[in-house]
Amino acid sequence: DAKDKNKFEGTWRLFKLAVPLDHDPGKDFLHVSDGLLQEIAKVLKFPVASLLPPEAFKVVRKSFDARKKLKEPKFVYTVDMDVQKLISLEPHCWDFISRLEPKVGLVEHVHATRDFGDLTSIIRECKENKEAVLKEGNGHNIFSTELYKDLATRKPKIAVVGSGPSGLFAALVLAELGADVTLIERGQPVEKRGRDIGALVVRRILELESNFCFGEGGAGTWSDGKLVTRIGRNSGSVLAVMRTLVQFGAPKQILIDGKPHLGTDRLVPLLRNFRQHLQDLGVSIMFGTRVDDLVIKDGHVLGVMVSKSADRLHLTSQKMEYDAVMLAVGHSARDIYEMLLTHNVELIPKDFSIGLRIEHPQELINSIQYAELASKVCHGRGKIPVADYKVASYIDKEDFYGASDAGLASRSCYSFCMCPGGQVVLTSTSPSEICINGMSFSRRASKWANAALVVTVTTKDFEALDYYGSLAGVKFQREFEQRAALMGGGDFMVPVQTATDFLENKLSVTSAPASSYRLGVKAANLHQLFPIHITEALKQSLVTFDKELPGFICNEALLHGVETRTSSPIQIPRNSDSYESTSVKGLYPVGEGAGYAGGIISAAVDGMLAGFAVAKKFSLFHGDV
Ligand code: FAD
Image (cartoon, rainbow, N blue to C red):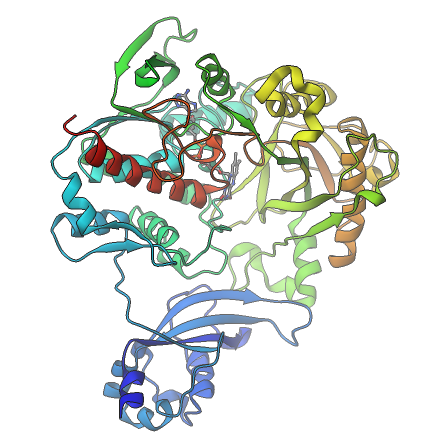
């Protein structure tokens, strides 16, 4: 009957299938194991699990769950069941399927959706006039065959400034759609950038234009490569970005892993493939080329002024003309903010967070999170992932002691960018400033676990810096970065204090443990770094985190100063549909530096959507260009 027929159509999604550790293949993310078939059989109430054909099931998500309240740790799966295939391979299943009822969050009937794959495939399908559409989760069309028809005849000249995730994805979309794209990057390609980073870490030479923030792939290249995002893991745009990363060499398991990450060793070859693809599409890529200024006439951007890094003082500038300029420069390009102000481009100060980076021995975090299971972690080689954590606390303004009026506000303190098996790295772009972050390799095999512990700050916190206008937030960041450089004693040394000493407000002179930070650490009292209300928020939160993760506060926990660039202190206002700056026509601010993203995936999504918006704008409103 009709009800039965409905059960045949589309796919049934089975959630929360928990497979005990001993019955799971571990890191093989795609494998439908016997252990998993047993869990599926329980849901279907099918008596003989070994009769279920693995081909009828597809793993959609897999996560490791070792929460303490569980009797034993498990891998937790979401699986799609193709009913037609299942019945054709094992007809006995029908009796059981026909009795299956949906239960929200456990068993759901998902209607057939076409899997359009990566961005290149989606756009090419649209070009070939097939019925293709890239949809957002809410059903909104991002791009479709219909839209492509309007674009086909035009070839605008677009400059994409910055080759971070947002710039790369903007360039990809526009190049696939036939625009004449130039990608301009102040830093170096990954091969040369790797050598520059080596020189920084080994010989303390900071290349101002090629470092942990600047260069091919942007700030996310020498990173942990976490691909988690707060913008909706299953949205059409995030999936398109993730599949595009797979197209360029990321392992397929990132599509399934509950906490996907790549690591620097995988990001570097991925970026080379991305570059090759863009070049094959005809994109002209200019490395070692910095955009210093915009050419603006009558409120319209006509092009950019660029200078070459080879000319170390950037004395010779060259004018390049474009129909549109996409500004994907990240939030460390402070010179760009200053340049925009000279053109009266509106910049709005925004809230962000500042704090310290805490580092523990990874083994300690493993044992806090996994108890006796910790011994089985095997430095990222075994079944069990190296342990991570995520903590957050809320501090009511009533709980602040000794804070000035400006500091009296309720705040959140939270862990950010946690890197299990990673190392602390220098993300300064000037020798007089210290700011740090974390990176890791794909196996996350180092003996350290680090994470930022940051406190929210609002524009009220930097009111006193009003003189700097919309750049007050940048000035606020810079003050702590410069103070950290002084406290470190120069030469990129980082000031540190154990968590225990930080709570007791005393210098860690004899007891400071080792750090993964390669350029050296110096004992300092980190109370001297921030205003009292930030220090107080960090102290109170550490105590809260220690209750959640007993052992978190200890002599081996080393706080490093300073973490300031959690997100952009500025937003560059733009039109929400066209992505065009509200101040200047033809300028498209995108990604993290423009204040519209935070992290690799959200920056990539923003670049992709802006790319579509620019393509649409040119075909629909500009006529022939
Ligand atoms: P960016 O990646 O900052 O790229 C901007 C690019 O523009 C740079 O390549 C820069 O050289 C170039 N540029 C700047 N000015 C100019 C100019 N004037 N002319 C020409 N080119 C210019 N996020 C995660 O999601 N997961 C992580 O694990 C993670 N780890 C991180 C680790 C580290 C060490 C750092 C620094 C960041 C990490 N992040 C992580 C954050 C993530 O890297 C950023 O959110 C993301 O890269 C922002 O992308 P974007 O394209 O907006 O800008």
